[in-house]
Length: 107
Image (cartoon, rainbow, N blue to C red; front, side):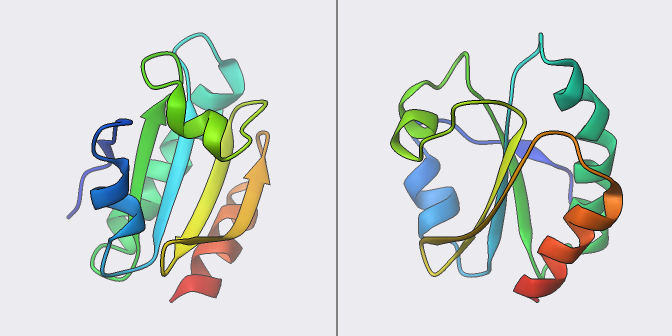
């Protein structure tokens, strides 16, 4: 089972843009209550779709460049990448079904 892991500004290109499979990134921060609310959902999806979709997270307080580049203005923001391009976005806490739908579009 895959564990959800952190990406940084430094390794974002290699981990997300150049990933061989579609990738979902969760932009979050420690102080963000809605981020903590969706964290178990994102973690569960990472395990469920291991090998089909790569799911990672990025702390926006520690990595300000990448969120700025992709216009992340509020968190949580979850972006889906395929072939190095953003193909879908979810902003805010949503039910598990919304995130499952996002993943299903990638597989």
